[in-house]
Amino acid sequence: MNIVRQFSVSLVNRPGVLANICRVLADAKVNIIALTISDSVELGVLRIIVDKPEVARTVLSRLDAPVAETDVLQIDLSNRPGAMANLAERLSEAHININYAYVTTGGSGGKATAILKVQYPDKAMKVLREARLTGAGRDETKFLVRPAYKSR
Image (cartoon, rainbow, N blue to C red; front, side, top):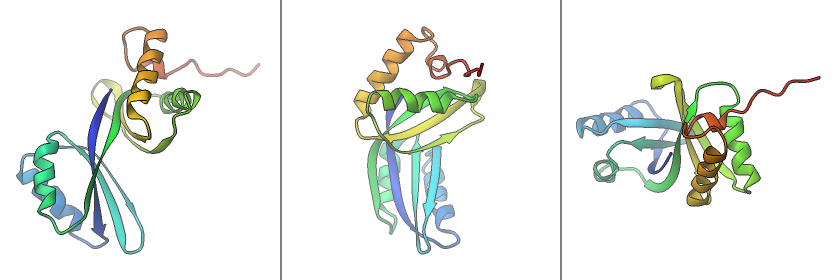
């Protein structure tokens, strides 16, 4: 679990724009870890997490597109039913709102990676770390999966 830098790029909604951004990052040897795009009729917002934020910042600043940066949580989860629900419940119990989230699955070792934008990232990390310590011990992902509810 880490606080990482996310880049949000406003895009004109037309063919080739995303390809261009991905190409300039690739040419700069920047690997995309997570990516999501939300759209409207005319514009889209590309949100990306990369392995080299300093290089990405330089490359993206050369594009003719507005770029914003923000800190988000990057959390490894067990890739099974209930993992995201339990994470959201833990944050909710601590009165921490998730503004938005996106999740990748199929990672190594059966893991999923969740990216969460929360108002208080440091507090959220503390809550989740404490849940890990009182939950399943040292495996950071197991505390997020509680046993399934069984009806009577």
